Image (cartoon, rainbow over all chains, first blue to last red; front, top):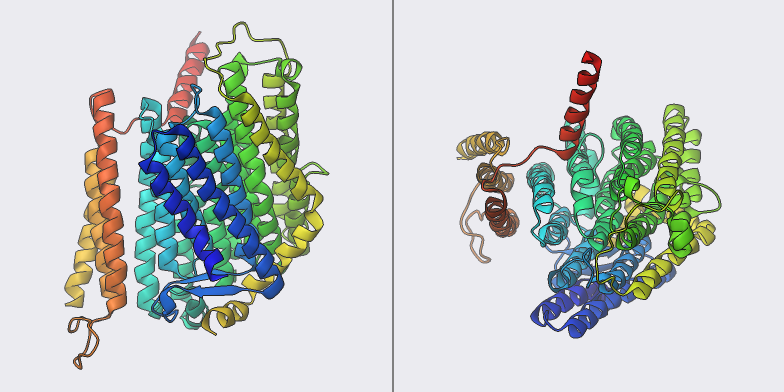
Length: 492
Length: 123
């Protein structure tokens, strides 16, 4: 198991370094990148199986005591979410290889290796057992995302990238101040030790720490009112990069929030979180409705969906946390697939603007089918995974008598369906556009379709396995809500 | 000692925040450099009073080595990010002739729509 945890960090980093060294040899570079990402994804699968059988596993890096050294903790929460995340990156990289020769593709010489760095960052962020390593993991993710976002150096990307970098750098700086604050108050940054020491602090200091990290993680997660950087920057990047960002980056923020605020028992922040969650849901859904470009609509939906996860977390009940975790697992693949389909549309139509596309359902029924499944799932229609996830969050809300938030969640769901209909009407129905300016070469279309197909199959699997997945989410939530479990695992 | 450090943190933070509200990227970068220094100082202050060098075996009061290790890591990271932002600024300079942060697209669009509405109301 030591090797498994290490592999998830080392394999993608090593493959990134090697792939960068041979970046001019297309096939060698892609093979190395895929090998690194595949090893990490495979290792995470092994981790999931082992943790499900034997319970949480802790690796003390270098054998140091948790108070001094770095610990990697594979509890049931990390073991559930990480395999999904790593599988997504692998599938997107397949799509990227298929797309690399098109006008819409990223520059593979940089994007392949950087994807490896991003993967290592994602693994580290989910596995780490202390706040400072979480900071380092965030930086690893952000640095690679800065490069991925701006590496083509076009004017639009620079304009949006600048906002993105400045916002996230500010959040990172606040994170660092927060670390100083936590260390001054408790004398440690280890999460297991913090679960002992934070509850003993005076209320003001404790809630100050909670609120501070809510702002830090909230900026990464793009909650209201800290979201403005997201819909501006995501659509400018190449499809595959937007797909990974949409599926993973904001979710890392929510992941950190679920872990930190639940473990530390910040129940008193619950009402604030619920209010922000409600506004986030509605603002995101309304923003999406006002857009007329496929990628921008989808970007606003990321924000709206973050609201649901925050609502599950803000309830601070066992059912609420479990609902938020299930929503996380459902949302990551669905959002990624939608962006991949957005990429297919752009590739086929020459643009993603709704007023310049049309009639795609007739000409490319396969793309239409690949869009319909995740779109309906995102809107929360049965029998797709979105329905199960929303049902879990909303029923937790009803159980906790949080009626206003339940109503807001339902309204946001209806608005989501409306804007998905808007995409459907604009892109798939209607007359053919006057002229389709497809930029040549069209890339490796079968490979792109196959990658999207695998991802859609993944979301369908999640729908089919919703029952067992919900049980796993409940287990994961249990681990988080009882800090004793986490503490014994780490400090034993 | 500690008080002067805290005043330093406050001063660096306020100047940094002032600078990152500027419109030119070069000022924003300087602002982040100062904010990074402020955060590192805050980390060091969080480690308690200073003492002898933190090497094992000494018997005098030793400085706490952990915040120093954290601070070093943070310094390296902010160093790399500063370079990256400088590269962005240079690229922006070659593309547009200056390093101003441009208006938000959405803001521009809304302003345009508002102007059109007003125009129609006038007619």
